[in-house]
Amino acid sequence: MKIEVSEVLKSNYAAKGIPKGALALPLTLLVVVLFIPLIMNMHESYSNLYYDGSLESTENLTCNLFSGNWVAYSGGPYYDNESCPFITYKQNCFTNGRPDRDFLKWRWKPDECELPLFDAKKFLKLVRGKSMAFVGDSIGRNQMESLLCLLNSVARPEDITDRYTLNDGKYFKWWFYAHYNFTVATLWSPFLVKSSEKYLNDTSFSNAENLYLDEADEAWTTHVANFDYVIFSGGQWFFRPLTFYEKGRVVGCQQCHNVTTDPLNLYGYRNALRTAFRTVVNLKGFKGMVILVTHSPNHFENGAWNKGGGCNRTMPITKEESAMVKPYGLEEIYETQVEEFRVAEKEGREKGLRFGLMNITGVMLMRADGHPDKYGHNLDANVRINDCVHWCMPGPVDTWNQFLLRLITIATF
Image (cartoon, rainbow, N blue to C red; front, side, top):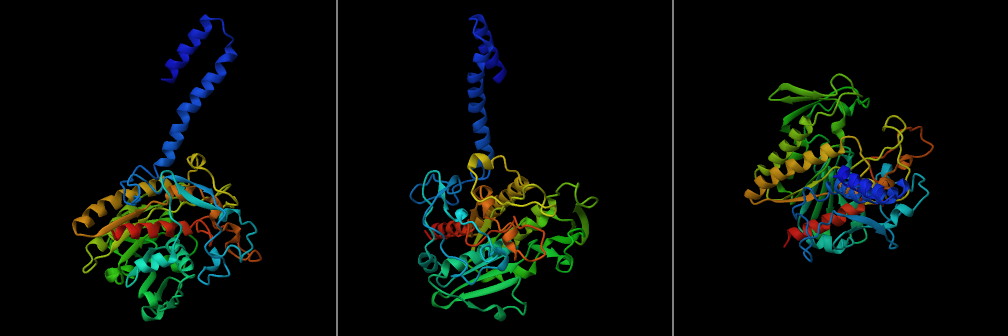
């Protein structure tokens, strides 16, 4: 089509003796008009491609909360590092010396409606007498700790971890809000399925972890049957060397030969997610709601995570700019998540279960400024790796719980 249009322009202008330079402006405008929709479509794949109204606004049933932009906001954060005692040290960016505050002066604005601010009293009223589990890796824990901080202005929970585990609390945590009879827990399961757990003693990221793709991890399956909300997240741990087992036999691997050049083999992630969904859907006695938080993007620039890469931006980028940001494997993992979610949702709804998709991938792709970067540790510490995976608290991760509040509000109708 471009060739046909340019040829027509060329012949018409040539016939009238118009100088060649006069073609530059109309052709430039034509390219812009054709190119901008392509950029928009690239970004919209994260917010609209798989959207089916799972999180629609009750005021506007056509509103997709995940398609929008970050807009300036003067209201300030919900809490700070002094008022909230639940911030993990590595996400406590201000304690670790982060000097700028501009990244806190933004709120998420959907294109066609408003996302209500987080209301701690409303949240606790909705979850009175209920329980909520965050299942996955440290990204899920990041969201849970954000939730604790958001609720802290209304109620302070009791740590009841020792009732459930003798673990030191690093990987598993239970909190109880007595006045509301509400329990919230984080259950560490970075692969969602059974693994050899070599990672506990090996931080080299070069030795393959064994994953048993047809066996869900008992670290979470033994606890969630009576939970009202089970929130799955993760995917970050599926970029390392992995060996896949099914029925006790090796069926494949990832980065088997060369850690740096072998491509991702998402057979492992797809089947781990499938097993997790099937397990919870068929779990005896489970009557709760299953929520999937889509993949949280990293933003390493000027190098990989172990090659000096960092994320020192101080402002969000626009939707149009984010279309050009391509973290390694993000698109493939995101598509895998949503495809498996849809299959599980159909099966689960036939059994009377509720499902919700918290589609944060495109939203957070714009927030390269929200990571700890070098402020994920004490600046005097001898640490050379920047954190462009987790999220500062307070920060844009708090928006996830605005989505969560909206999701459970709709689920109660």
